[in-house]
Image 1 (tube, rainbow, N blue to C red):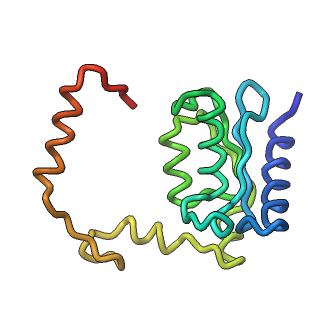
Image 2 (cartoon, helix red, strand yellow; image 1 turned 90 degrees about the horizontal axis):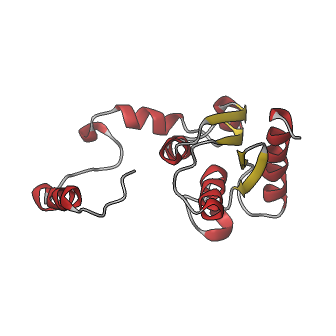
Image 3 (spheres, one colour; image 1 turned 45 degrees about the horizontal axis):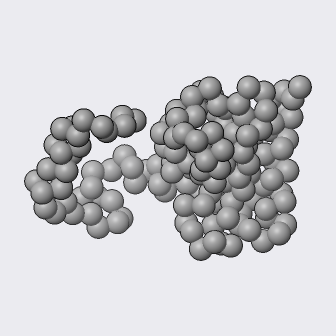
Length: 157
């Protein structure tokens, strides 16, 4: 039976393998359920031209397909590096039970993968963010949420 170190070593191996084959940056992740790896991911941003194809997101997508559910309760995520804000959010949304990571955000920053800017932007009011942001047609858009609440067959998440 594998242990936490074995799972983390696999995530680290995936980070090196993905980088070596030119898939993307040096990041890897695995999703574990009941002591077994059910999905693996590696950074595929540059090979797929998908800015969301981070290792953790790819592993979560594959795990959800393998299990046939968006709810990864009872699963653990092992990431070769401390997740960026997007990946951390995806891990929370997946309802994973635990997150384990190897390298720290400072290690990634020293290799030119610095997420500090994103964490700072999140804290700022919209009017102060570097990405110009404006809400339009909010009443019309909110109507869809009212329709969602009235939908008898909605699947809550």
